[in-house]
Image 1 (tube, rainbow, N blue to C red):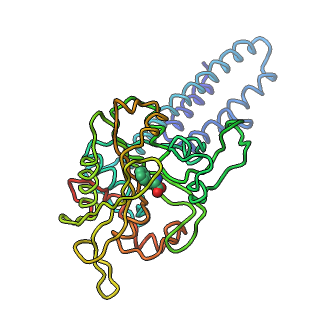
Image 2: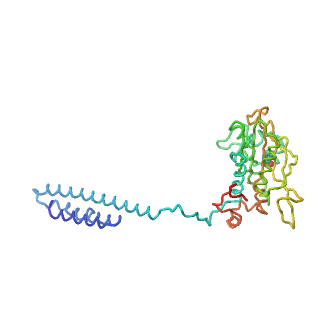
Image 3: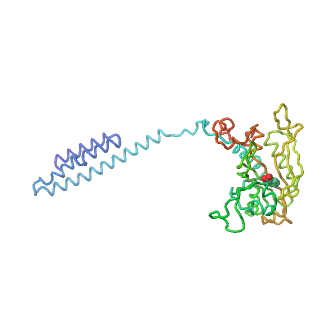
Length: 363
Ligand code: PHE
């Protein structure tokens, strides 16, 4: 290799070693191999070289060109690995640091209530079942022993969907926004074999709107099916739940005979409370507050769920989550629950990292 090429190679090696980053590397590449680069100029000058030397000179130049390209690539790999090391160092996560409570994210009271329900009923051996908000009217009504002409279908102020919903059933059954979580009872029964022990929290819809009703609200359903489940189990389960949820150990609980088409016998459940100077206190007192509906699953509902009523029986309950949330935290108005006003959430929301658990206390 001639002296000028040797020099060019040495200069390039030095410049590459001095290049501290990708921009420096690119500058070296342009200075040597770019349109006006030193090596490019030598290649361009090849035409002026005497014919007998041209072949040798051309070969040497091309060799050098390949060598320089390889040197640039090698330096690039080194710089990239340095950059990665620096990033890994700078972005290292100290997993021993305590969690920083976020000033932004808060848990909505309804989500909090669902977490608490899952904790309390989870401890009683329940698992969580789900169903869709858009339900067919067979599961929402018919399978629950609410016949076509039953006034309950009107009472529920149902939102019916257009008959022909893309992907929906074409005949017979109509789609509705589920008016309660009870259709998930049917789904749970059709979906797995008894014994069953599930709660089903979720959104429900009725065309109602005032300080204590919202067209979209939440319920939790409970369903227990086994061979010899009785009303005594129902009472024990719900009394334990209500005392744990409201954090009142001796909370008075009253079961009042009632009617639901899907349970027989049926009851409504009240909890004791007192009202002093307009202030509601949950616990012992002269007054009662209605909290939920329940009963023994009607044999027709079991049959609709594919379960033999001669072999199995059980209980079900359903309650509104807004109501029990408002009562527990003393919230006077339901409407702000779903207005997404960040000031309301800042006031009533729960710290994201402060999850409900039986171990840390749920109240
Ligand atoms: N689905 C009933 C309602 O929405 C509540 C309920 C559920 C009652 C299960 C009894 C058993 O009012």
